[in-house]
Length: 88
Image (cartoon, rainbow, N blue to C red; front, side):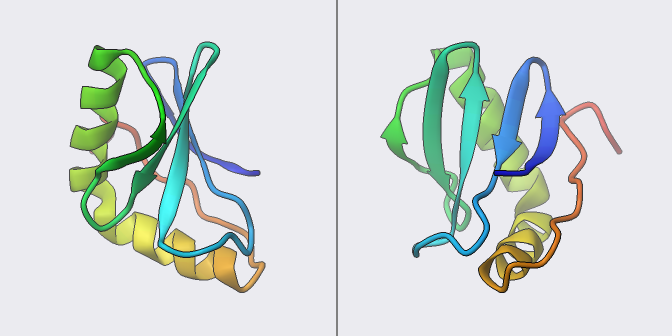
């Protein structure tokens, strides 16, 4: 599962050829959660409140890049890095 972004100790990853709906996995310390790309909603798992808020904010800023990576992942292609909250 490639890491596509890393910010404030939060790692964002996607499985290659993963199941629908389009989503990504966020890891913070020992916690893991899945978020929908389209809405930023948490659909499984748990993150501390501040980490969850940061992931939701990041999702809104990077939605187009997440969709692009999702499409690459669905066809087994290499994913592109996506900037964190601290990137332009």
